[in-house]
Length: 285
Image (cartoon, rainbow, N blue to C red; front, side, top):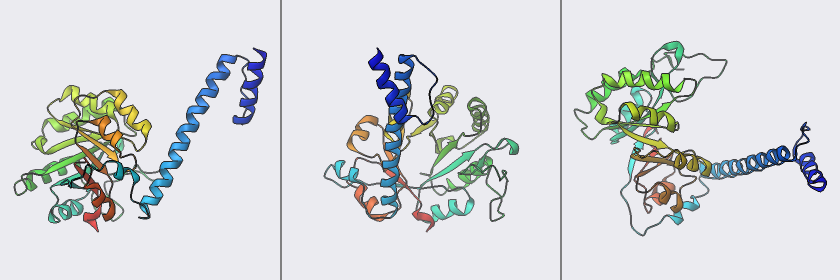
């Protein structure tokens, strides 16, 4: 026991900048185990950031694309990414896109759902106008746009990416369900989110909707999704960084969509995979 305690003390001195006030070997082991797991996560995050920087600089085609090749070309469905205003929505439709993605946020001070991706910093407050002074679209505005647009585009699909940060999950779900109750375009909607528990809560009260799970760009994110067990999910949305045969097998038989591809070489490489489509910003360029 003394030798064990000395080893734990040496490990603690090496890894912990601050002294842990405990003489319980079991507690020491627990702290070391937590540190080990944290180190693995940090290493994975550092690797993914490095790989992401290479992809962003267009100097590398993701190695995982080579592993997913099945020998024939697939027809990919492009989805216009972050169409959070009328200009982007109309530009995507004019560019031939039949599927678009918007971000739905509930800022408590405004008491309405707005189309916005980034949560404001502490120095900035929510506003119904963007940096250009243009009125932000609300969820009601989006539903009206869908109702008008689907008259000429019958295959229109809109992915709602639910941003639940800063809002209590049940409150967010209740308010969204109220908005969907009077919505006439539910068949055109696919509800997606990183918050899988929010999706489960929504499905419990409105099982007729189509739901898609966005999986974080890490193996831990994939493990969390699989552990949550969501049998009602119809679409899996994964990052190009973790795309591989093992990931495709893990979410099988769901159709898989990849976010976010803007490099032509990556899009071409994706055509030889089992992927159904991809999110892109190329429509706005």
